[in-house]
Length: 196
Ligand SMILES: Cc1cc2nc3c(=O)[nH]c(=O)nc-3n(C[C@H](O)[C@H](O)[C@H](O)COP(=O)(O)O)c2cc1C
Image 1: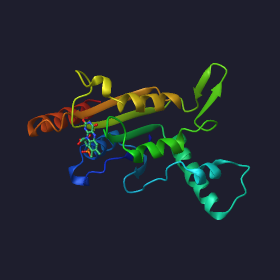
Image 2 (image 1 turned 90 degrees about the horizontal axis):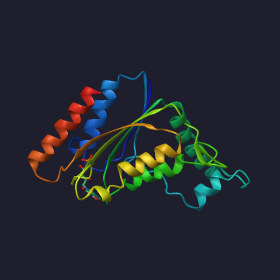
Image 3 (image 1 turned 135 degrees about the vertical axis):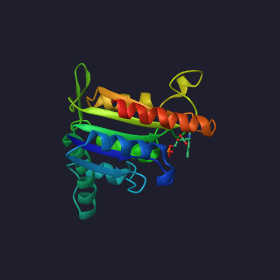
């Protein structure tokens, strides 16, 4: 098993719910090979003119553009090579942290991880398994706030776009609703990982 493991929490490492849970999950999956990115530490550039130029084959090359292009290519290659993807993401303002969004913008690229066809976009990364390890202050899996969940739904949409449909979500949610709910949410998520 080759795992691509991403963490996007900006919490201190020993306080992060998602980091603790992804570490447990990756440990239990017992992979032969793990590529790890701490996206908070390794801030990827937003997609601006220079990154777009780096992607464009017709642009005149220089060392800086080559370096940007190589970084994007490496991120795509890692995703292509993994058979299992573990994404640890807190909810920030109903969706993913911008550090994770930047990674997505570097890998969800037409012609590389999906392609446009006459019948719509077609993913090129079929046959992979993804785990979404999510945490939020409130509760979004059910109840009145469910319609505001643009974290699980968004990540699933992006993974589906590139052809990944076998997705398991593990949530530690409601962690801001008091220490008891925080502890219960972590215990529940941890038990779900053990039971996988
Ligand atoms: C910038 C920021 C935005 C947040 N936005 C939300 C939100 O929209 N909804 C929510 O329920 N919790 C929100 N939270 C709380 C986090 O999702 C929650 O604390 C989560 O457990 C953090 O995961 P971590 O412990 O792995 O860092 C936010 C926290 C931060 C720092």
